[in-house]
Structures are given as structure tokens and as C-alpha cells.
Length: 236
Image (cartoon, rainbow, N blue to C red; front, side, top):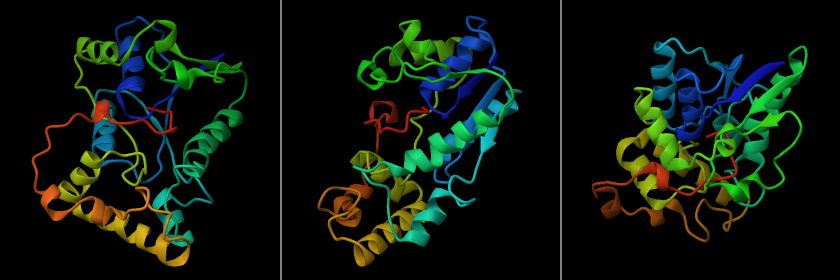
């Protein structure tokens, strides 16, 4: 049976790899990263960092008819939704499930839910899936300790830079340090409002340009991404 780790480039899935490096878990046969094309730059840098250590990560791309998430949103003039979380289905779950089904033989799919995520575990315990961190009762803080024990840097929270579940601190970070990506996010929201509904914005009843003022964007940001709210995209 092949073991497959869904790797999101964040703390949890990195902690599983760290446990494997420390020989506390067997090394998975495959490590797969479903690349939406809209991940935060620090996630791509961290994956490069691990690959330079000799860790082989299979990158899956083309979530919807070979387009990435940004191209899809630009074509449809939409943004990801808090209610109908189609982005996770089309650009995370479906590519990974399709890839897993394409493999010959049985497989065990590892997901990085930690022990503090009891609610997210509800209804997830299905045949063919395993949750090593939950089994070992390792919480988020424990994950960070394990990563440091392996001698690795602790990654920032993974996710898309157009995720509607981001906190204000992340939108400020985007505007301040990644103005090119900020412009993409702003333009997508404008198109959504223009062609669909003025109520369908990243932040409820407010455009992110108003939500993140110029004054806010000048503030220093001593925040921790690992504390920010999680979306349903569970490949952290």
C-alpha cells in the first residue's frame, strides 16, 4: 500500500514531514502539493526550501481545465466564496483525488489535522485516510516544536492570497509587501461586484480597498500567520 501525504506548505503538514525525518513516522511514498497558482509567496519559498533539502514534492497544477485559480477567477469574473467553497473543491480536493485514483493499487492518504482540530475531524474519518497528528495527539504548538527539533524553519500559515477567510493583518501584509498580488485581488473583487453582486466581496458588505486603508498599510505588522483563521482548505 502506498502512503500519500497531502502537503500544503504550512505548519501541520510540515510537522508530519518532520516526524518522518526524525524517524517517528515512516517516510511517505509520495508527497503531493496541489498548487492553486494563488498561494502566498512564502509558501512557494518554503517548498523550495524543503526541496533543496532533498525532499521530493510532486506539484499538481491545473485545477480546472488546466487553468489556475487566478485565471479561473479572471475568466468568470468571480472571487472565492465564504459560503460555497468551490475553490477548495476545484483546486485542492479534485486534483488530489484524481491523482490518487490514477495510481495503481491501494493507498493511504495522510492529512495534517492536528489534535486541536476536533471539529474539522468530524465526518473525515473515512477508509483510506489517516490523520497522524491527531492520532499522536499533537497540537499546533507541538507541531512547531517538532519542526524545530528536525532543524527546520517553521513555515508561515499556508493559503491563497485571495482567500476570503484571511484576517485584516494578512490583507495589510498583501498590500504592503506584495502590491502586485494586492492589485490582482482588488481587480478580481471589482469585477465580481461589477458583473455579479455588490454584496459578494471578500469581507462581508465591504470592499477590501476600504477595509484596508492607506494608514493601515503603513503599520508595522508583528503578527503571526499561524494564529489566523483557517478556511476549509485542509491541506495545511
